Structure formats: C-alpha cells, structure tokens
Image (cartoon, rainbow, N blue to C red; front, side, top):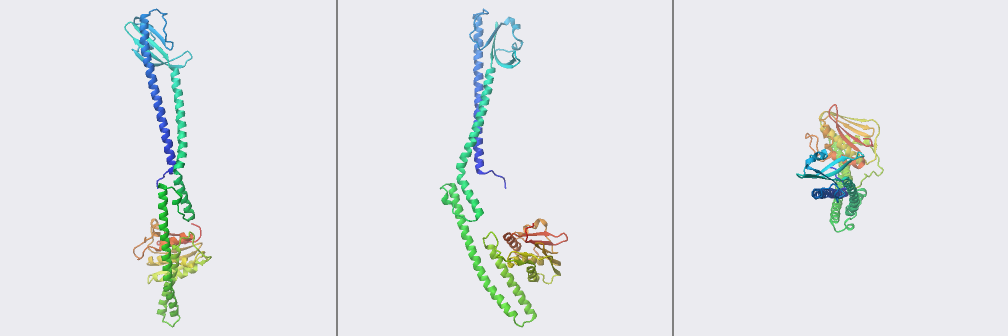
Length: 429
C-alpha cells in the first residue's frame, strides 16, 4: 500500500508552500522591478546630464566655470587631446556603462560612467553607485526576512485552519478508533453537522445497523441449526447405544461403532462451528482442560476408515503429557482435520503422530506440499491435490479455531518426503 500523508498534514504543507511561494514570487518581482526602474532612471539621467555638461562647456569654455551637479564627477577633454583621457575610458563610445575600480583604501567601488563623444569634445560623467548597491543588498535581506516571516505565518495559519477544517474528520476518526478498541458501536451521525462528514457518519451508521442485523440473523440461524442438529444426533446416539446393548454379530457391532464415532464427530463439529459463529474476542474455556494425548487416540480411531485397505501404518508417539485449556470438542475438531488429511493423502508408508513439548505433529509419507503453497492451503476452498475429493474447508476451520484460542498451526514439507502438520498449543512460535 503506498505511503500517504495524513489529510491535515497535506493541508498544512499545501498552505505553507502556497504562502511561501507567493511571498517569494512577490519578493523576486519587487527586486527585479526596482532594479530595472532604478537602473533605467540613472542611465537616462546620466545620458541627459552628460549631454548638458558638454553643451555647458561649449558655452562656458573657461576651466573655472561652475558645474551645478555635485553628485557627478564631470570631466571633459578636447577631441584633439584624447591622450589625456584615462586609458580604460578611451574604448567607450557614447552611452552609459557599469564599471568598478579600487579606491585609495583598496576597496572595489562600483560606478556608472556616462560618455558623450563629438568631433570637438569628449565629455564624461562618473557617479559612485556603491550606496545604491548597498541599498539593493539591504533590500534583498529585508525581502528574504519578509519571505521567511510570511512563510512562518502561512505555516501557523495552515496549522490553525487545518485544525478547524479537519476537526469533524478528526472526531470521526477518533470515534472509529474507539470502536475498534471496544467493539461497542454508538450512532455517530447525531454528533456531526449536516455536511459531508455528517453524511459519511450517517452512511457508517446505516452500514453498522445492517451489519448488526445480519449478525443477529446469523446467530439466530446458528442457534436454530444447532437445536435441530442436536436432536437427531441425540436420537441416533441413543438408538445406537441401545442396539449395542443387544446380542449382535461382530460385523453389525462394528458398523454400530462406526455410527457412534460419526455421531460423536458430528456433535463435536457442530459445537466447534457454533463457537466460531460467536462474536467473542476470546474463546470460552469455562475452566475445562483437555488431555490432548487422549483426544489424539480417539481421533486416530475415528479417522481410521479413511485408510481403508491402503498399506499405511499408524504410530502414536507420546513424548510427554500435554493439556490444553479448551473444550475437548474443539481440540478434537482441530486434530481430526490434520490427522484425517494425513490418512486421506497417504497412499502407502506411515503416518506418525507425535504428542509433547506443547505441540502435536502429524507426519506422513504422502505426496507432500511445496513450501510456497503451505500458507495458501489454509484459505477457504484451497486443496493440496485433486486425488482426494473435498471442499477445502478443513484447514480453514482449523486456522479459525487457532486464531480464537491463540494456538498456531502450520504445514511444511518433510525432507525425506511427505508433509508435517503441526498444531502448537503453547506460546512458542
């Protein structure tokens, strides 16, 4: 999922960048316009004054004739004596030029030079523009400070405006977080104004109401199904018990045993499915502790019909006692799926069930699985092979039971062939 900033952060950043960019654009435009206008004004003034100075000298050739402009250094030379003109000025034609030269203190000072050349006179006006350059630098510093100040102001305004604009959305997100923690839903639409956020809250209320009705119908349906299933199962179990009390042939008695095992398995499966249909976050144990090894023996006995006449041996290895804080029916359903799968998919060889050290491991010599497919097999409808018919729901049910009780189930290939299914009851991974 691509990373996205929070909506409030995006509003703040957008507002700050907009204010900063607008202020910077204004500052650049101000500097540019000021420099162009000032430079044009000085150039026009110098060009006009140098012409006036040349005309003044034509009319007043005396060296001591007063020149009124004190901000300019005026110098005039006869065209026939251009050798007296400073060497760096001789190359310039009539016009205004930006130059720089070192003063007596060794500082580089910028100045403008206005030149007017005619057939009889060469006139020069020199103006020191160091003060102008200093003023431009000061203006630049002031504008940079203004940009920074306006950027900070834009940021503060963005923070304040975003908090005001985002307050309904923030409130809605807060209530959704609280719902996720507590699981208790309260109508949200009455707490918001009749705007877009209010419409969203109303849609969430409507969705939550429909979902609640759906869950209630599901619970009622499961309760009804449970009641209806328990009754015929109880009748079958009672009838089977009565029949087994009679004097019957061994073949008939074995068939009754199979019916009894099937009834017990159906009852356990019904209890487990009803447990999964509940909405509790923690699985109920009611203080019941189950001897896992004893349940494994029963499950192996119930699942033996899946072996049929296949040349497969079954070995139970109880390394140490193991108890689970859960009803025996739940443990039986989880183990029945793992063990019966091993019996179904193993065509020859051996199935070994190992109990102890906080887990039950079921190892088989069947076709095995690929390591990359192990996790996918726990999804609904997924099957490891088409050799055996099935809906692909068994492992999905086991995974849901494990999530409910905090257990862990895994599948992995065996190096020597086949697969191993592990149901771990303790907290070790």
